[in-house]
Picture 1: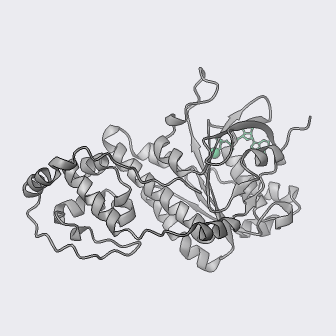
Picture 2: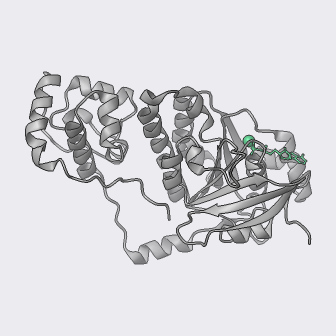
Picture 3: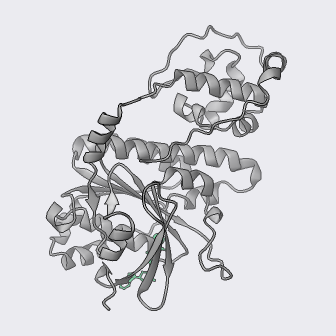
Length: 357
Ligand SMILES: Nc1ncnc2c1ncn2[C@@H]1O[C@H](COP(=O)(O)OP(=O)(O)O)[C@@H](O)[C@H]1O
Ligand SMILES: [Mg+2]
C-alpha cells in the first residue's frame, strides 16, 4: 500500500494560535466571513467557507492549485503560507479545517485484505527484476523508476505497455494502456517491435494504447484528471504510464520561491494517480530523471525533482543504472514490504530480459 502523504505537524505553536490568527485575519481579510457550513464532497470544497478565509486568500489558494479538501489537507503550513501570503498559523488553521472536512475512507482490515487480493502483477520480461520488485509491477500501486538519462526508464515503460496486453498466464493482464508523454519520447515503432517479439499483432497493441503529450504542468495534471473519462470508454485499462513525472515540473518551476507551489502541484498529481490505481485496480508506472553523480555509486535520490514528495508517494522505487553494454542494474529503494536489493537485467532490441549466465 502507498504511504500516505499527510504530514503530521508538531503543534508547538498551538497555544499562541488563537491570538495570532485573529491578528492575521484582521490584517489581511476584510471580506465577509461566511459561516462554516460543511460543503465538501470528495472533490469539491468551498474554500470561502473556511472561517477566516476571505475572497483574496481563496483566490490566491485557487491560483496556487489548492482547490480541493485533499489538496489543502495534505499541504504543508509553510508552503501554504508562502504561496498565499498568509501567516503560518492561519495556514495551519485552514489545513486543519480541510482535514476535518475530508471523508476519511476507513475500511476494516478484512476489507483491506479483500482489496489486496485483487492486486495483479505485470511481468517486466526479466525474472530477476520481477523478483526484486515482488513478482512484477503491481496494480493499486505506483512504481517509480528513477535514474540518469539513458538508464532504461522509458524502455521499461515500452516493455510494460506491451506486456500488460498479454494474457495473464503470459505475465500480462489483457489490459489497455494510458501513456502520458511529457518529453516527446513515446515511439510507436518501438512498441511494434516489442509487440512482435511477444507474438502480438503490433497494430492491435498500438490500438490499445491511449497516448497524450503533455505540454505544461497544468496540462499534465489535467490529463491525469481526464483518465476516468477514458475508463468509461476503455474499462480495461490496466496500466497508466507517466514518462516522465518530473521533467515539466523541473523546467516550469525554477527557483526557491516556486518550490512550495511545485511540490504542492506534484503532490496533487501523484495523489490523483494513486486514486486511479486504487479505483480501477490499475498499475501506475512513473519515471523520474535524476542527475548522474560520478562520485557516487548510486545517485542521491533526493536530487530528483520532487524528491521528497515522490519518495513518499511511490510504493515501489527502483533506481536504474546503465552498466556495461546492454546490461542494466536495478536497485529497490525503501519498499514498505520488500527487502532492499539489487539485480541485473538487460535491454536490447528485443526489449527487457534476463542476462544469461
Ligand atoms: N531498439 C533498441 N535496441 C537496443 N537497445 C535499445 C533500443 N532502444 C533503446 N535501447 C537502449 O535503451 C537506451 C535508452 O533508454 P531509455 O529508456 O530511453 O532511457 P531513459 O532512462 O532516459 O528513459 C538506449 O541508450 C539503448 O541502450
Ligand atoms: Mg526516457
